[in-house]
Amino acid sequence: MAYIEVSDVHKSFEGRRILHGMNFQVAEHAVVGLLGPNGSGKTTMIRLVNGVILPDQGSMRVAGWNPLTEGNEIRRNAGIVTEGAGLYHDMSALENLRFFARLYGVTKHRRAEELLEQFDLTPHKDRPTGQFSTGMKKRLALAKALLQRPSLLFLDEPTNGLDPEGIHEVLHHLKELNAKEGTTILICSHVLQQMESVCGSYILMESGKVIAQGTKESLERTYRQDLRLRVETGLQMESAAVYGYPVCREGVHSLEFTLTRKEDISPLLTSILQESWVHSAEIVNRDLESLYFLIKEGARP
Ligand SMILES: Nc1ncnc2c1ncn2[C@@H]1O[C@H](COP(=O)(O)OP(=O)(O)OP(=O)(O)O)[C@@H](O)[C@H]1O
Image: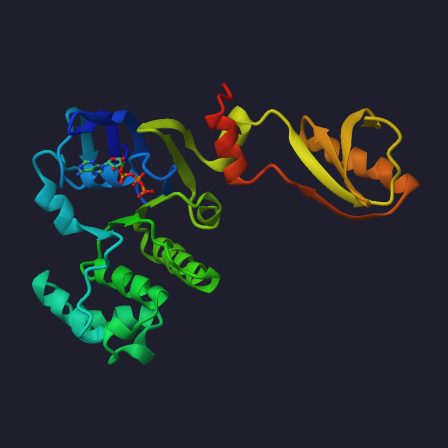
């Protein structure tokens, strides 16, 4: 049975329909990306599954609880990291974590210190968090959300405002958390390419609806019609098809072939190598973002 189950959920604000018929599942121990553009309704969905707001219609189940009637249980047992980290800026990192540990009734001795260590914040534990960089604040917010060892973690745009190093660090900590503790993680983001390194599967949203759901491989299988292989080569292109594959020139030494299946790559490269050199070959339309646009533009399984 799914750990999070959302069935036909609708939500309007002031008569404006924001979510219309959301359906998705998240398996226990999975890391799932809820992905979609700004304003597509991701934060609204997170608030609904936490029981902070109520749907107009539909049913939900989160770790065995019903968000409509058992929101308190869900919020007590799930970690939530939203845009405002909810930290006290005058207090140090350690004081913040100890304060929230008391508030949440966390009894485990040295839990705050343990989390500071886990998130590489021990050297900064006595500094006021107001002086922290955005990346450090995000890590501390994650530590705060994990004080009660939740089995479920909701993250709303965890990489917003971070530089590449900060993004790498936060994503690394999330992967580690899932691998070591099996925490189920639902991450909302509009930055699709960042999520590829951490999520095992995706829920793709557009204007308040799920347009596709699955692992990247299953989405690829269902929606991708062709693949574009960019080859850095000295091969001369004499027609719009080379060795039977449609091709166009992308640069002086760069050709882009359109293939229908991965199995065509080896024979193509073997043929090219008989005539010229090859310095690199790369599939250029296999990233999550191009897949998202393909699905959004109406690709049909
Ligand atoms: N309490 C509210 N009252 C009125 N409108 C709201 C409320 N909360 C959200 N909305 C509207 O619902 C729409 C979806 O917002 P939501 O924050 O869920 O989107 P999002 O996908 O999380 O976007 P972002 O990536 O920008 O965070 C937006 O148009 C927003 O203005």
